[in-house]
Image (cartoon, rainbow over all chains, first blue to last red; front, side, top):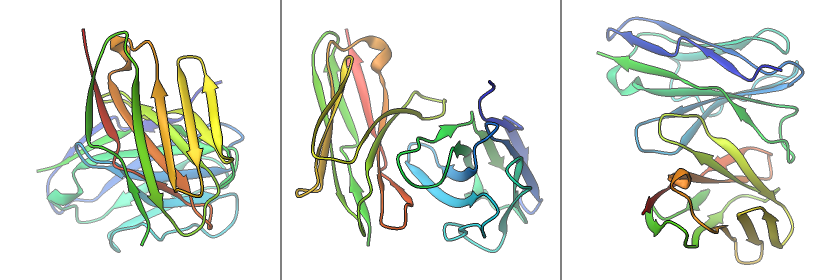
Length: 115
Length: 109
């Protein structure tokens, strides 16, 4: 079946504007993760969803960041009042379940540039 | 705090062998993953270790020593396509994946 998809692939926005990033996980995967990766750096965990449980928001860097997920399907990551420091690639991953040896399957990412 | 250490960059020759090390200090341990990430692409899964020892998978092998908080990824018969970043990640006691910054591997002909 199809892998994890993300849209848009690239987004250029002006400082102060809001952006919404979308992730479609692999069908049947109950766990969904959002990461941020700045140029040349490792993955920074943002948030994860597991089924209908309350999401783990411990990685969100500020209250400008929020995410939602409808059931076990699409998720959206919203960044309000974007800042230049938000420029990065935002990666979404899904796995059969959170924790355990379930590998994470990553989408191609959304490259966000805040001017 | 939780910490994953990997070398920033390594260089190796096509056809040779390279070992990429990873040391970790985490709150608990429920397994260690290695992922490969080509420039501009998403990470892809390579291996998972939860018990001590060596796991071999084709040209790639991954080793774990839980008592030493240490793992390595061994790549044999290097090919140019192996040029990529290799990410070490540890599943902590809360089953949260803690990621290292990655090791950029450069393969020279």
